[in-house]
Amino acid sequence: QKEVEQDPGPLSVPEGAIVSLNCTYSNSAFQYFMWYRQYSRKGPELLMYTYSSGNKEDGRFTAQVDKSSKYISLFIRDSQPSDSATYLCAANLLNTGGFKTIFGAGTRLFVKA
Amino acid sequence: GAVVSQHPSWVICKSGTSVKIECRSLDFQATTMFWYRQFPKQSLMLMATSNEGSKATYEQGVEKDKFLINHASLTLSTLTVTSAHPEDSSFYICSAREGTSGSETQYFGPGTRLLVL
Image 1 (cartoon, chains in turn brown, yellow):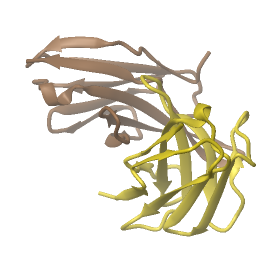
Image 2 (cartoon, one colour):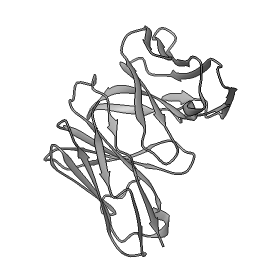
Image 3 (cartoon, one colour):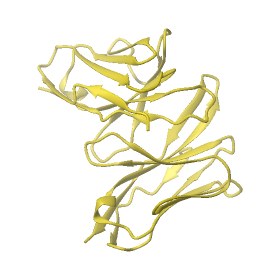
Image 4 (cartoon, chains in turn yellow, blue):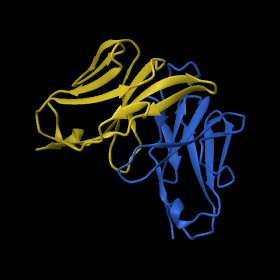
C-alpha cells in the first residue's frame, strides 16, 4: 500500500463544472498537506498548503483536510480549460533523516471547452 | 512566491557522455534540495535529497556513482548524470526547501528534459 493514494484518472469535465480531486493517506504522522499542479513538460507548481483539518480557500480553489479519516481534497470551482493539468497531492512526514515529502501518483484533469 | 530555476531546460547528448544539470533557488536560501525523475504520464520519483555542505542521501535503487549530486551552496545544487545511456533519458526536476521543520513546502524548478542518443 502506498503511503499516499491518488486516483490517476484521467478525469474529464465540461467547462464550468466543479472538480473534486481526492487523496487518502495511511500514516497519521503526516502533518502538512499540499496540492501541486503540473502542466505537461513543466515542473510542479504549488497550489495549496494546509496543516490543520478544515478548509482553506484561495480563489476558485479550496483545499480540505480531514485528519480523522486521513482524507485530503482539492475542489476547483468554475473549472476552465486552462485548469487541464495533472494535480499532485503531497504530505510531509518526519522520519529519521528529517521531513520527507510523499507524493501521490497525480490525477490528470481535462476540462473541455 | 519562491523561484527555482533549472539549467539547461533540455539537453541531447551522445551515449557515454556526462551531463550536468544545475538547480538554483533565486530568492531564498535552500537548506535542502531534492532531485526527482519523472517518466511520461507518471508521478515524481525521488532520486536523492541533498543538504548544503553534506553528502546527498540517495533513495533505494538509485546509483550514487551514476547520479552525482553536489549541493555546494545554499542556492545551488547540481546533478551530474555520468556516462549517460539511452535508459537515462527522462525528465529531471529539482526542488528546494528553505527550512527543516516540515512546515516549509518544496518549490520546484521547471525541469530538464534529457535525451540520450
